[in-house]
Amino acid sequence: MRSFLNDRARDLKPSGIRKYFDIVQTMPDAISLGVGEPDFVTPWEVRNAAIRSLQRGYTQYTGNRGLPELRENISAYLRQRFDVDYPAERVIVTVGASEGIDLVLRAVCETGDEILVPDPAYVSYAPIIQLCGGVPVSVHCSAENGFILTPEMIEKCVTPRTKAIILAYPNNPTGGIMTREELEAIVPVIEKHDLLVISDEIYAELTYGRRHCSIASLGNMRERTVLLNGFSKAFAMTGWRVGFVCAPEEIDKAMLKIHQYSILCAPRMGQHAAVAALAEGFSDGFAAVEEMRAEYDKRRRFLVRAFNDMGLDCFEPRGAFYVFPSVKRTGMSGEEFANGLLMQQRVAVVPGSAFGQCGADHIRCSYATSMAQLSEAMDRIEKYLKSKA
Image (cartoon, rainbow, N blue to C red; front, top):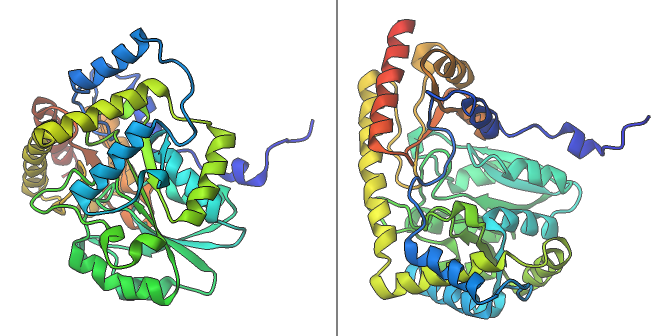
């Protein structure tokens, strides 16, 4: 029998994150610092809103764009928190921010189009670009400049085939952020080459010492920016699968058509929960978000200090909930280090190469877990390092 797979699906590499997550499930004594999922439970009022929606029999489809109340709240949320003005009629509620990434790339990417991607960056960008027939082009970032993009770095990678650039800040896996000044610096290059910006801001609420700035808030950038966000990280709602995407009108209409045919609408119960999450936030100053961020900040500082004390150079993250220490001094690659650590000390981390070639000498550790677990994990990592000395 012939193979029925298309070349793109056949050649797609499996996720480097899921591999380690699957292995650790078979080790009951293992500590996982691998998957980026808050260890907090979704706030009760948010869960209760979903329960009430079920009790009232709200089990039907919503409109393709999502519940009108939720879209109005998202529009108000973006204005209040990030000074970004997308009207409710330009909001599409998606199945997590992940669907938003897929939607925009399917809407804009044609065969051979080049899309600039920061390296290291979230594992899904390059594969989805490839599935759409595009070509992901890595823009090499490093700890020396905070893992940011600069005008010179972008200029070096642009060709006549470049259509868009992905901004992934706060960054997964590095925790790097881009300040308003750093974003303003790259705007002229983006405008000069007439690029679309795909701005993944899923960690926008999780920054330390400085508020997040969206490139869509700068000058005329809203009209060439597709903004992706959602409720998974900041609101501890990963399993609810509710995200949103906002875009210029032409792209918005194309994404809506794809969404209509492929998804129809995001789960209704999750949308009711998201309405409650924003309503609660507006009424109490997003207290639950602030409490979670404060706890993440403690863990962040603990891990950075612990890795540096062990002799592993660790960039200080300014956003998200990951650290990205270098293991180069050990003489091992990130993958060798991660494999050995898991087998010998039962600690699961993700090799940096899962996020791009620039991460090959690094590992990613999520600090979205308890301080007790983090402390034990650091003890085990120190033991592993001593065994290799």
